[in-house]
Amino acid sequence: MIDIGITGGETIVAGELVRVLINHPDASIKWIAGQRQGLSVAHVHKGLLGECDLRLTEPDASTVDVVFNCDSHDSEWCEAQCAAKPQLRVIDLSRTISSSEGDMMYGLCEINRKFMVHDCYGVVRMPRPEAMLSLLSLIPLAVDHNLEGYIEIEMSYGTMTPGDDVPKLIDEITNVLRVLQPGFAGKVSMKRGAADPTHRGIASLVTLPCSIDVDALKERYEDYYDDHNFTFITDMHVDIADVANTNKCLLELSSDNGCLRVKAVADSLLKGSAGNAVHVMNLLFGLHERAGLALKAQVY
Image (cartoon, rainbow, N blue to C red; front, side):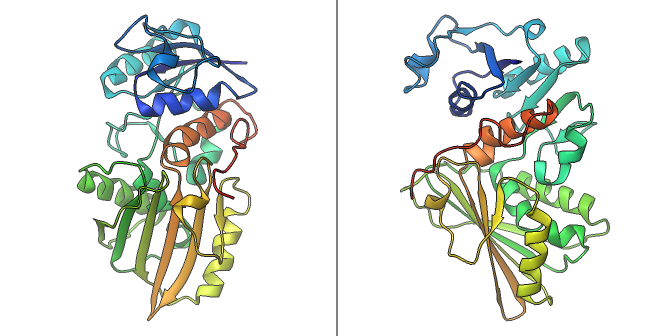
């Protein structure tokens, strides 16, 4: 059993983590830390009544194997605990650290899975949902060194509220692409599209020049993601509703006048945040990737 602590207990991401982890067969939440100490977690996150009887408390790294950090105010505390307790893992969802800073592992399982299962300790930093979708749309091209020219990304949102951090998102995406394809010198741009608040989630449309036949690209994408458990290629039109309440990312590829267009959809709170963090935990502790993440879709 993995003993778990969660900081930033009042945040939306922490609430989603609790909902996933209380049904995880190998997880035991020891404490949930927050500013309003003593308050019932079920009072903060409705729907947990009868499922979680914990109250917000002080953090205590000595009692846990892994800390999920959901609040930037706790980042320094987490780093100090890692220094004092070398076997501690911290899965950082606060997203306050540059993707290229220090020796921190970047928590995108589709590129760093093999590194996470070999004695990875310290901090694993989670990608932002927008960066994750954009990168999943481009990884097979980047690892084959087939990225070229200008990459345009259009984001649209369900119930997720977009931030104002587009420059940071572009930096995060570009830094990872340059690791996957050294020498990549293309430009990346991002703009916000129309919102659809019917379902929670996020969608991205990535457009870039590509001379490779789209059917050959679909085969390459299917081959790359074949042994990954949560990213799937489809010929069907994809929509945010298709992934709500799941840890899946769906990719739809098409071509138009020499350009490749990749649409990606995911639940921003699960695949984009809490679900991906639990996926990382599974890898760090040698569990099956899907443990605790076989979730029921809301629309079917």
